[in-house]
Length: 467
Ligand SMILES: Cc1cc2nc3c(=O)[nH]c(=O)nc-3n(C[C@H](O)[C@H](O)[C@H](O)COP(=O)(O)O)c2cc1C
Image (cartoon, rainbow, N blue to C red; front, side):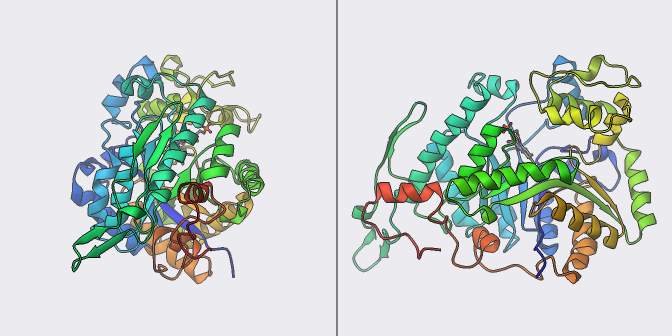
C-alpha cells in the first residue's frame, strides 16, 4: 500500500498568516477572524476535506524587526492583532467529530500547572482530539511582553525539558485510571488513595499539588514540535510525536528529517512513529489554466511591505532600509532563521534576487513550496515532495481563507484517494489513535512520559495495555 499522506491546515488567529495583503481579496474571509462562526465554518470545511487536524500557530511576540518597530506590522495586520488560539477550540469541536486540534503554547511564557489543566479540560471536551505544539519563543518582543527576559537559545530548550517533566507528571502520574468511582450509592466520587501528589522543585518550576482534572482520553495531548537547530532536533527526538518542518526544496528537508529520526532511534523510540509535516501551499483549479488564473489574480493583492515585515522577522534583518529594486546579497546573521535568506542568496549562484522579487515570492507560500495546477498536477507534486523529503504529510497554508482549503478537499483529496495514498475516511478514536492506530490513545512505553508513570506510581501496572 502506498504511504498515506497526512494533512494539517496551518492557520493563525489574525488577519494575516503567511500571505500578506490577500485579506483584501473579495473572496477572502480572514477579516472575520474575530468571529466564532468563522472558526466553526472552517472546522466543518476541514472535516469535510478529511484534514487530519488544524494547527493554530501562536506567539506572544510581534514582528518588530522591519523599521525597528511594530508600526508596519500593525498597519498591514501582520500577526497583530492576534487572538488566543485556545478559546475557539470547544466551539470547533462541537461542530466536528474527528478533526484534530494542534494548539501552540509556549513553555517559557505559560505557567505549567494551569496550562496542564487547560489541556486536560480540552482533551475531555473534544473527546481526545487535542495536540500541543511546544514552542520556546524566539522573539525579543515576546520576552519583553511577558517579562521572561531574553534567554539564550539552548537554555530555552533546557527550560522546556523541565516544563515537560512537570506536565508529564501531572498528566500521566497524578491520577490512576480507576481513581474516579462516580459511586452514587456510596456517595464517593473519587478514591483518594488513587490520586497522587506531584512534587517538583526544579530550577524554574515548582509545584506541590495533585492534578486538578481527572484523566482525559489521551492524558498527554499529542505532542508537536518544530525544532530545526541541533538542540531543537534533540528536543524533538526526545519528546515530539509530530514534527513541523519548513524548507523550499525536498532535498533541503531530507537530511533534517533523517537526522531527527536517527536521534529518536538512539533514544529508544521507533523512528517511524515520528510524523513529519512540511509547510506547503496549494493553488488548485479544475484545469491548469484555471489554477494559473487564480495565481495571477491572487498576485494582484500581494502586500510588499507586509511581506517584508515577515521576511525581516524570519531573517532578523531590517529590510526597511534596502531599496526594493536592489539585489539582495548574502550577509552574515546573528539572529533569525539563516536559511530564510540563504534560499535566495546561496541556493542558485546564477540567480540574483531583488528585494521586491523576494517579497513577491514569499508573499504567497512563505518559506514553503507552492504547488499550482490541476488536481492531477498538484497530487503529482505532493507525492514527489513526500517521497523525496521523507516527510509524512503537509502543513498546508493558503492564499485565500477558507477557499483554498475547500478546493483542496474537493479537488486534491479525491485525486490522492484514487491513487491510494489518502485515507478514504477518518479512523475512529482519539487524535493519537487516528495517527497511530486503535488502542494507542496514550503515549507508548518508549516515550519519556512513561518513565514518569513508573516513578510516581511504583508497582502500578501499565495504565493501559502496552502498545
Ligand atoms: C511550521 C512551523 C510552525 C511554527 N510555529 C510556531 C509558532 O506557532 N510559534 C512559535 O513561537 N514558533 C513557531 N515555530 C518556530 C519553532 O518553534 C522553532 O523555534 C523554529 O523552527 C526554530 O527551531 P530552533 O529553535 O530549534 O532553532 C514554527 C516553526 C515551523 C517550522
